[in-house]
Amino acid sequence: MLKLIKRMLPVLVCAVIFVMSGALGAECSAEEDYGYFGALEDHQDALSGEQAQELLDLLDSTAREIHANVGVILGNASLDGLSERSYAKEFHNRSFGEYSDSIVLMLVQAGSGKVDQIYCTDRAYDMYQPRIDSIFDAVYDGLDSSGGDNYYAAVTNYCAYLRSHDSVPSKAEAATAEAEVTAAAEAAEGADKTKHPCMPVSRRGTVISFFWRSQEGSVSA
Image 1 (tube, rainbow, N blue to C red):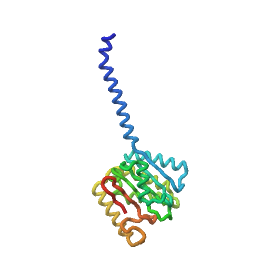
Image 2 (spheres, rainbow, N blue to C red):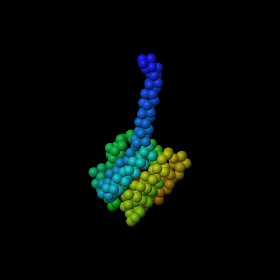
Image 3 (tube, rainbow, N blue to C red):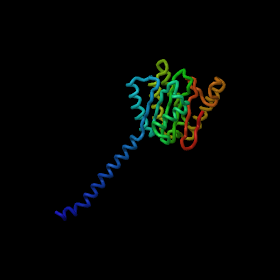
Image 4 (tube, one colour):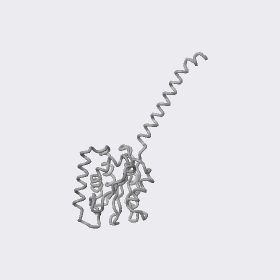
């Protein structure tokens, strides 16, 4: 019996190592698939409970697909006394962490005089900063549907755009996007002196975005 055990020992050791390696592999795979997630805050009471849950599920699945956290804020008029950029940054850091790969869209309350924002970091910045104008085009297409302020459609379009552009753009694509943004900014300049003269103006009459590169500086209006 002892001899049999000694003979079987190498086989048993190999079996244990195989099982453990499989478990570790599964753990790594799960972390890769589910390490990113979504976050949603509705301070306008614009969504029903069912809509909010559906959108949160969509944000989660989008985050896993693009390998970056995805957040949405429907901001009220006060923003807790913070500036638009500061509020978006605070939500980003609180929800995902300061140095995470994340993108946050904030749509402010219509008529509040506040500015819609996009705040993103690291890999999400690399993927989406050159596509800033196109992101807002998709968002506002949804927002303006069904008579306007259709936040459900806006967030759905936002996620669809992120999913379909989940890679760093080529230099040619980035240059084209930059030229389009510059042209829009020049067209908007002088149209309303209360708006920032160096950024495109959205259909909601607001400067459209801020971006933040957590480790390489910032690009902002």
